[in-house]
Length: 362
Image 1 (tube, rainbow, N blue to C red):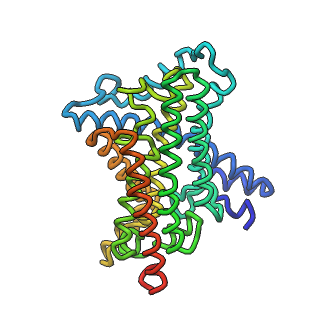
Image 2: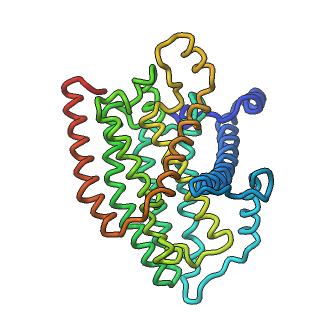
């Protein structure tokens, strides 16, 4: 499949008009419009999720959250963004300048690269590589690299300790994450994210969370736990751990450098939730129940609305975790992965293989 064939446009009217006049430039027009839409989407998501996090935490703690800047504080993320833009970027004495300034770019770059291949709707996807699952696992390593470089280059012991914790935690839990994703690849027969979604077409019981006998729900729960650890969010936020490490790997960062880490953290939460939707919840498919008039109404709702609705539901679960559970110790965290999560995921993968051989799955 050519590059032009794998590029799904994120537009309709304007792009079609331009292609009529300049047919030879269709690929480049698609690319420019798609990337522009992606930049707008990432910027908007960061602001929306920051506002949502504050409101959710406020209501969990029986308070209102931001209320003063705009209606119910809706303009608060914009005010915060302007504050960070206007702040000076300070570099600690003794820090490695090139690495210090380069480190925040890795996590943010990884978010853009993964957002580009998410299937938001039938024809709302920037690119669909055949090995999309391998692409996601490979690109996610850029985040670990950015955290390590940030902690080491800051010339701060607490930052370095936070970076080492982050690397150990993310590399460890990435093994379990890969095993869970491998299970979905096995039963769907493809590593393309779009094809994985299409393999769940039909009723709600054709989604992989329900289609696998008992194993789908267990795999989904395991994914939520593992992805929370991958995101360095409470109760697995040992890389930052304010009560121990001040702010962990980004202690010495300020201004836009800090904002890049901050934005990447929230957009990564959207990506993890979007992947959960893609792998387990049917992606952009409507939750059809087999009753014709009800299914007709559900199908009339655009697929991208279903995709974002499911994704934000998972995001709410992540926020629920953060404001409910206490932080684990680092030894408890590593024991959870190597003594519990990894063995359970290996057994789960083998059981799915047995089910496939017996014809009970896939």
